[in-house]
Image (cartoon, rainbow, N blue to C red; front, side):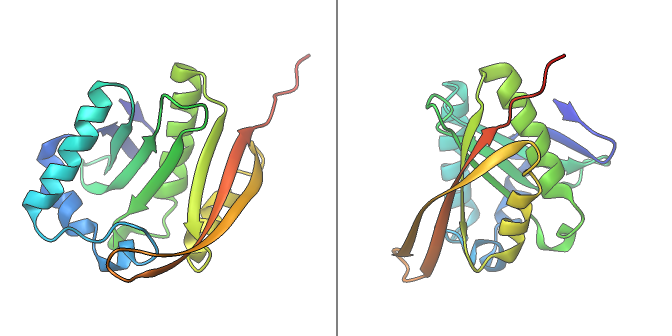
Length: 176
């Protein structure tokens, strides 16, 4: 659906289930509310819920693929029917720090802005997740980034999170 020189961003399909399941591990979820899936059936159930939401145009769930169709991660837009949809992105461990997350997120932001007319997005990251914070700041030229509430939370599994929310509001382009 979306193609760049380095990646393809396509709607998630169950053929990527095992890639998603294996990639969404303890390291990836260390600073996130969700936990790794207990098994591939649990992954399939949750991903099917996202696919159902996609069919209703409430969520976008994309697989990030290399040019050779290797699964690299996922980029998501939740609450698409709301004024300020929530963004999510993750890259498998072996492919991190190569710019794939920012490239994919940039392309999806442009797509959602063009197709759905959205100009504000919610992004949340644990303050200890330096990579997520650095990713956010890569968008400062395109978006005004406004800090929202900070919250310490404990997940059902007992994981302690220190979540900082942000609103990304598109900067108006200068006209001639």
